[in-house]
Length: 499
Image (spheres, rainbow, N blue to C red):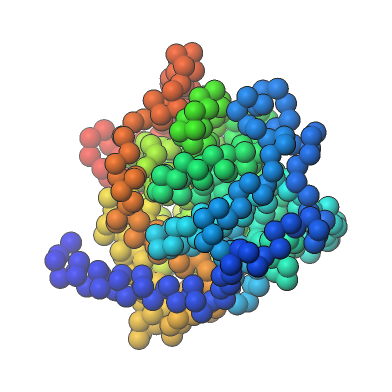
């Protein structure tokens, strides 16, 4: 890449990086003193903390490492008096701190206002350990359910009565979503690793364990890997997923490794080992079901869309690399997948001048399965660019992110200045102006300038970090040997980018 080209991209990147911060003040933000918040939500709603017998972890295998029963969620309230913070998902989607979207946007808060970010995480940790039995009718299928289930990460902190009445979202039953709990664990570990705040790690540890054990119900066949249930059970809430999926499966693998790392840091070696055993099993299944030689299939179903190239398929690896953890897959597979996404989802849409389309068929045609599969999501494009940066693909990263600048911020674009939408289509139609997710560009900044605590962390592999026992180590080796890699994208010695 020429020096002039580098300077040109650097200027555009800096403009967009700082301009996207408009959302923190113009997108709908509340920041109040904690003393003015009614802390006891029990008196204001149907919400209640865990009691004996209610915990998903109320069994003898976990009591030694998960001090669940008798834990008071108020213990993780605002200890440092940074106040309570809320920001909207967007001006069209009126929900506070929508968590599946905060997963992308939170890099901005972590970098600029880390104590506010930890405060939000504590709010969600408290929510994991609570339930709200009030009845809600879900719009997608008309079924009835309860507002908040113990162990499920809240979709949002509410709308009209934030912190007290959670889950304003009511299209689907989010207690059945497969991405919220792994995203909670991944954000917790990333924030823990970036800040080095041991008190924070100890505070949220019970919620992390509860969130992980809650996910076991979605491993239908006991092979270690969770399965999607044939409806849009993740942040792409119009895009149906069946069986093992690239997006949720990758998040699950990353969450298992992050939980093991957090457990080891807090002195819970036995729990760390359990997580790594699950990780080894799940990784083998994930790769066997989804790896096709050049990328991971959208899901393990048999429909035409199951072979789609999803731009966001390495979201779990994005967080893994951002947190200083060992990669989930071999580096050649990661780079091959990213190059495939770049060649198809980015460059085959207006020559890379619009960002990355969510879904692309391997024949080079946009996936028209649903509205979201054919959309370009601005925040996902930034997160994809961040992942590329983390794996040394600087040219591809800045070209990918530049598409959002051209379409959204430049004079030749669509004029979305300071109102970046969630999405647009290849013909320029937008959805949801002034949206939270584009703050994900700060994930690129963290990739370019990682926190010192992550830079200085010892570079060890996953098994060493989790202190795997000799028996488990042998199990991991056997699991790796059983994998049948397909090296369709790489030769033995030289990268082949025509994958």
